[in-house]
Amino acid sequence: MGLVFSRGVGQPRFNPGYLKGLGGVLKVLEVVFALIAFILAFSGYFNYGYFFNSAGWVKFATGVAWISSFLWLIMYMCNMYPWLLYEAIFDFILAAMLLIAGAVMIRGADFDSTRGACVFFCWAAMIVYIIDGIYNLRLRRSGVTNASIGSGNVVTTTQTTVIKT
Image 1 (cartoon, rainbow, N blue to C red):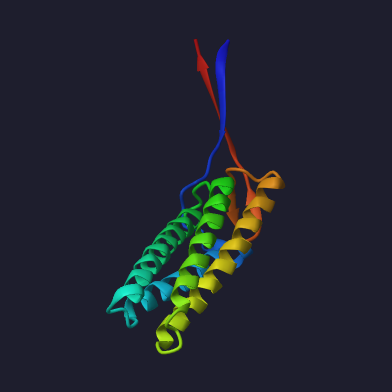
Image 2: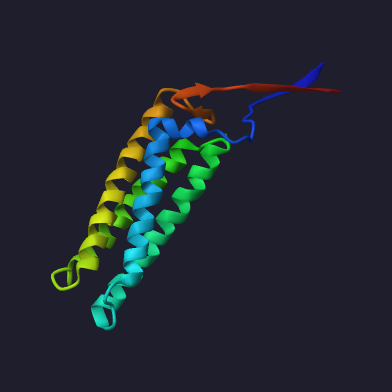
């Protein structure tokens, strides 16, 4: 008699079909909005005091959001296993960070339109992160855990290993 181990297996391969589903569209929007806000945070008028310090927080928040969203997108596009609960929690944390980032950029937006645009893209990204977090929680609640998600279909494969003793 041997021990039996069973685990899901995702084949690491490029899956462009992921971009056709709701999850793919949300990921692309997250990457685009966070990148635009990141660029705007670097290109405004921030040479003194409050404006410089608020821009520092926005640069940090949008940079973390952009890099993490890009990495999640790559993982999903390569059919690597998503961790839906962790990603949902991370989405809500990033949404809170972007809410604060947009709020600190409001002051001074009346004379610097770059700050106003940065607020818009921070909050647009925040809304997309909230929607993505809710979407991931709904996927998890429906029983999808560690599955390969592509073009709206869920595909789960299982590999069984028997070790003889």
